Length: 396
Image (cartoon, rainbow, N blue to C red; front, side):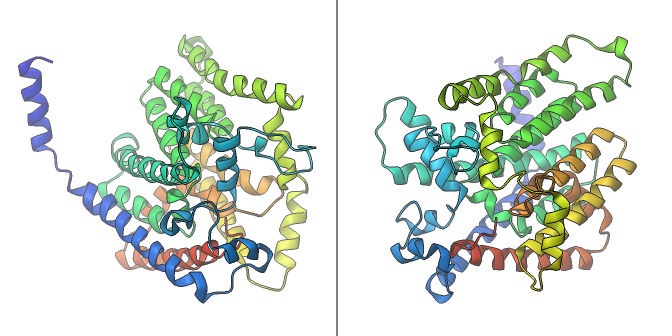
């Protein structure tokens, strides 16, 4: 880099204000995580743990003895942990018996990165490293999201900061710090959309390559990219160029993973077949909705169902009102997908990645008191959810 370019770069950073990073991201990030740690310490031993999983409560940990890390590892964390420590292992019948085949490889492989090059590391290291990675990806995603809302979608700084504020306190927002894939997926989602909306299709396709290896929702994102590509070409087929080829190359990594699992299981679509053992696609959406609504008690599933309905309705409004229809279509698809499987479990966790809804709410809630009221409701539920999560209740 020439001296003149260095001077220009230094001048750029000198005149940029990064106060928003502290105010909008760092301070809320630290504050919420400290709250969760306090809740975790208080909830452990002071509340009745889930009797079904009393074995974990009685032994005092789930994956690691280090309490501040272990409380961020529950349920699906165990499956990712098994991929890291033992690799993919099909069950006797992946259609009906739980197996880690249903889980996508990018996150556990990233966590295992040091292990790949020959380091012999204790199991607890992988759990801690996974939690650290999740937090780092979330911080990076929050920075990208702020710039995305401001510079790509052309909303105000107030809308950008409020969108992230709502994301921080959403009831299942603690998952972004857990041994889960949400933070990685969110980071890749915003990166993919940013590149695509800026017509940088090579980079959008590369990001889609990784998002397809992160979780099943990546297929939805990849599909919407074609819609967005054609939308930006104003649906004129004669304007299609070589960039469509880059998008077609994105699934190469996923296809390689499917082939690897086919060699293990004999199933060409092994991850999706294995999902049926976890209850996905085993019943109809109407049956699940009716069973949930007809139950006499208010539980996390009813709350999640209400969130799903709200997210779907808002996504329809986004599709109708926002100029880029692909964003509304993506929002609607990601909102419908969790309950379309017929299983009303973990739906509010899946809604975390439906970013357009958070932006819509931030834009439409004009007064500060309304915004603060919604955040208070979200954060109250978040504390309740996290206390249940720590005590082995199936919250997400």
